[in-house]
Amino acid sequence: MVDLEQLQKRVYRNKIAKGFNVTDIYQEFCYTYGELSEACEAYMKKKDDLGEELADVVLYLLGLSEILGINLEKEILNKIEKNEKRQYIQKEGVNIRIGE
Image 1 (cartoon, rainbow, N blue to C red):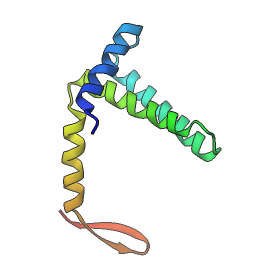
Image 2 (cartoon, rainbow, N blue to C red):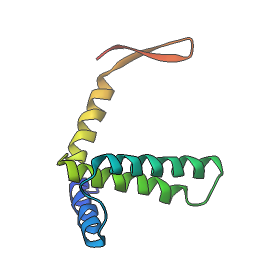
Image 3 (cartoon, rainbow, N blue to C red):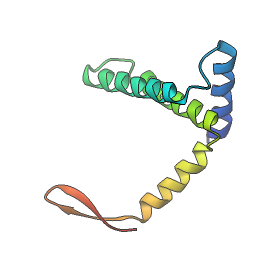
C-alpha cells in the first residue's frame, strides 16, 4: 500500500528543492486545473501519455495538500466511507441522492 502522507512530503520537498511555488495557493489550483485539462486532452486524443498526465494531477493535489496541511490520505478514506453510506435512486437516467 502507498503511504500518501509520505508522498505528500516527498512532493513538497521536491517542489522546494527545484524552486517551485509553495506559497501561492490560487496558482497551485490553476496548475492542478491545467494538468487535469491535459489529462482530458490526452484521453480525448487517445495519447499514450494519459497515465503520466493523471499522475501529474495527483502530484499537484498531493503538493497542494501538503502546503495546506491537509492529510489527503485521511480525507480520501473518510470520503470513501461517506460515499459508501449514501443512497441513490435513478430518475430519468440521473442519480439522485436520497439519504446518507
